Every structure is written in C-alpha cells, then in structure tokens.
Amino acid sequence: MDSTIEVQGKQLKLSNLEKVLYPAAGFTKQQIIDYYIRIGPAIIPHLAGRALTRKRYPNGVDEEFFYEKNAPQHRPDWVKTAPIWSEGNRRTVHYILCNDLATLVWLANLAAIELHPSLALAKDITCPTMMVFDLDPGPPANIVQCCRVGLWLREIFEHFGLESFPKTSGSKGLQIYVPLNTPTKYESTKTFARALAQLLEHEHPDMVVSDMKKHLRTGKVFVDWSQNDEHKTTVALYSLRARERPTVSTPVTWQEVESALKKKDTTLLVFEAKQVVARMEKMGDLFAPVLEWKQRLPDLQGVTAEPETISIAAQAEKEEEPKTRKRVAKDSGKRKPARKPGRKV
Image (cartoon, rainbow, N blue to C red; front, side, top):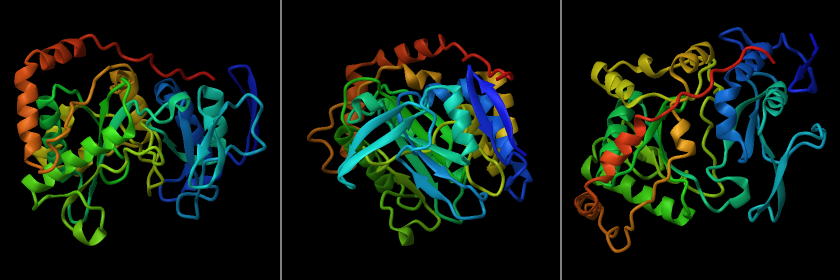
C-alpha cells in the first residue's frame, strides 16, 4: 500500500505502509511514521542542525540493517545537508540535517528506525553542546543497577554545581546528559567523563567498570565515557529502538530513576511508542533545558592523576561557589513545557 501525503507544503510518497517492521509486536511501517509525526515537535529541536547518522532496517528489526551517514542521491531537494570532512574516510560526508517534520517523515519512510545525532551542531562540529554518559549493564546487571550508578553520577555533578538529565537508552540501559552550550572541546568533555567513570570504578569496583572490554563487564555497569567524541553518536532522545518491541529512548525524571531503584522494578523505565507520545502530551519535553542551559565544566587540570582527587576537586568547587546549585534549582522552576505534538500533518 502506497500513499501520498502533504507535510508542511511538501509532497511525500510513502511506500509499503502495511509492512511489519517489528514482527513480535505487529508494528508496521505506517505506525512508525505515525509515531514520528506525533513526536515530531519534541524530537526535531534535538535533531535540528546536527549531523545525523541513520540506522536503517528495510526488512524489519529482525533482519539485516545498515548505518547510513552520507545523504542518498535520491533525496528531495528540500532535505538539508551539511558537508563534514571525515578523517577516517578521507573524504567529505554530506550528513542529513533533520530540521523539519517533512524530513523526519521522509526518513521514517526509508525505515530509518534509529536516529543518532552528533553531540555538536554541524556549524561547529568540534564543539559539543553537551556531555553524555551511557550506562550499559552487563548481564545479570540491568537498568536497576544503572539507576544506582546514575544517581551517584548526579551526586558528583551536584558537587560541581552542574545540572544533569536522565533518559532511557530504549534498550538495556540509562543515559545521563549534562547540557553545556558554552565554548568547549571534545578533549575537555571526554577527559572529564573518563575521570568520573574511573572515579566511580575506584569507589564501587564491585558494580562499576570504565573499561569497555566485555569480559570485565559481567554483572557490572559499564560507564561509557567514550561517547564524548566527534566521531561517535548517541541515540537521539525520542528515537525508536530496533528491539523486539517498539521501545523508545525516553526522557525521565530523577524521581522516576529513584523509584525504579527503590522498587527494583526494571519495567518502570521501559516505554513504547504510544506511551511516549502520551507522556509528552502530559509532561512536555523534559529535555528542553538541555538545548538552552549554559554550564561550564570545571578545570580538572592537575587533579585527574588519581581518581579520588576528583572528589577533593568537587568539594573545593562546591565550597568556592556555594550559590551555584541554588541558582540552577531556581532556574529549573522556570521550565516551560514544550508545545504538545500535533496530530495533523
């Protein structure tokens, strides 16, 4: 079944709408497109202006997939791209910029189920606007243990006067974002993130590992600091994941993280497409501040040689700027919920 629709004045031909792309859930391509249309007002601000890597599943989540970075030649002329030099490939890659709903729907029609944007804006690809930690549990550990580690991370951030925001990965783990939106480099965010991961491993060796070697991760939470790199991407907020069911990388509150840890209930932080749209309509975009809040990383020069020295640095930072946390808390009360997703295209 094919269909032609108009999205923001642009004609789009949609194909194979009845094709089931999530066999276990009976979730079709049409439902994928419908989800991205409904969540569009929330996800687009987090994609706009960023080089986008797509993970495409033309035959469904149980079949072969491929990553796509370069924009396909058959794209509509209104799809915006950004030329970025790739050292690894020794050529310029023309990344898609998902700046509008029409582009998002076009990508969904290509079975680009997962969307992975850069942590930097394409106009300044070497300057990340945020720092991210990917908490990945090694079985039998699960997202409950990730909640424990995430709360430890939040406590460290609070010592530095930094606000942080949690979201589910939509897969097995939890991801923590620290908005920056100030001039910085990946060298700084990566160094800082690695230092914190090593600190947690030093303080909680029975639960945390900072080395990605798989044989070290059994029963522990891998704090992946290496995501803070110009050449890596993290799954987008509100992106579907190619799991058995149409789960979504979903923003959550710290209260929800605490509740899941207290109840030891992994299901409390698993959300599928329909639930995420309903949450968005009720709660607004919990990650809206990540796009705007300006924060600076502390200078850790000279204190990262030994993991425990970060604790000393954090305490010193806290004592020097006792009002920082209060200012952030005050600002948080001014959040405005994002515009609710529309249902008309």
